[in-house]
Amino acid sequence: MKPVLYIVIPCYNEQEVLPITAPMFLNKINSLSEAGKISEDSRVLFVNDGSRDKTWEIITSLSEQDKRYCGICAGIG
Figure (cartoon, rainbow, N blue to C red):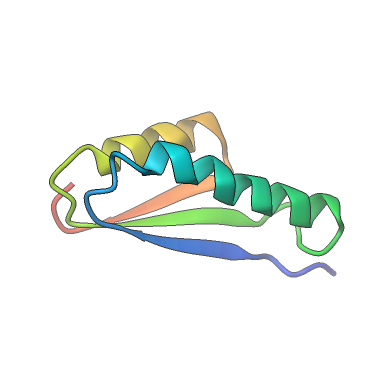
């Protein structure tokens, strides 16, 4: 049985960099999964910690585009 990996990314006002970095984390998940090192159920988990910009909107959009992205919103969203 392959381990399930969650890459947890804390986010605070990351609207400028999130569209750039999110695919990098997903690529890592994909490459590890394709190499048979982790489960296909592995995910990239963004934790929005009270961002006052569009970070949460970007996270929700990413999660709608790909099931391997997921998010938690703590605080103002």
